[in-house]
View 1 (cartoon, one colour):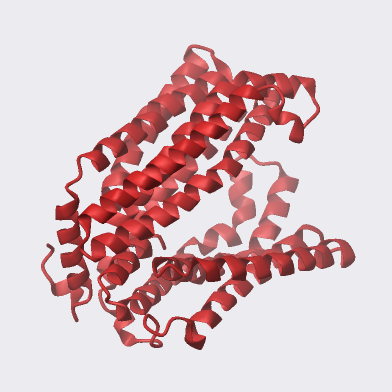
View 2 (cartoon, one colour):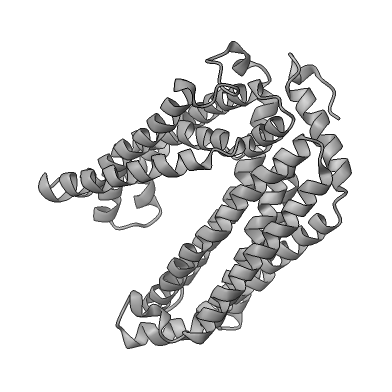
Length: 398
């Protein structure tokens, strides 16, 4: 939900409406903080919920204990994610990197102390996460209020409570868009776990998803950078510059994806050695290597196109596209290939990739290519004017 700020703060910064960035961030804090309370029962009652879903009692009870200790972490997200977007939108990514590096070093030391020295076990690991994430927020907030953002932060304002409903709608659309994407591959693992003799399949798929997750960090960086750049240019009224930024980002990320795709194909039988020495799992990963390579290639393009969508404020549109491609086409096709045709994990993954991710990528590419960027720039400029008006809820939609 915090990714709504990538649109609003990015466009406002491009339009030089600097004073609104701090107000947007405070609105996001309010909304996400309230949402944390709505989600709180899942943490408090994690044990009975997990038992209801069929988890073993010992696993459910331990998970429930950890979930309670992670409630401070849960609330830290409501403040950390918005301030990250706030700083990203004004191109202060260096600050994010340095603060994250310092907190990472502290996190490693505190983890060692709590888990190994004081022997707090898994609870110690949870407490370490609580401490680290609040330190992350403290570092970014300290930089902001201590003069790091003089143009965009002027202190707390009651204006943050104005226009909350419009802000909720864009935040919800952003949240739905990203959740539908992020949950997709979790569903893949859950579906694979329901296959007969699924242990080896889940092991192999977990290896592939880990490799994909590592490489995905690169496209996600392009996602963030593209969203901010496109939003900045549209807010400034530069449609051609937004189009150029989109093209450059997609081309660069695709080239990197092709390189990793080629590496997977070349070392298809060796890539799992960093995780396991089991010959059975190595062979299973080898069988999945083509699907892994295709996934990496598609995931080098799709996140960048999603970044273009976020920068342009198309979250609601993309949420519907994701719902249709992933859950109306991709998941049913994976079920058909996996169980009806009895193709196992290859069928499930192949159906979800070619029926969901590939179709969604093609649709986003067509929308981006056919976009009238000058018109988008005009709409963004009008949108910024609307949101910076004293009563945005009473202003006509452009």
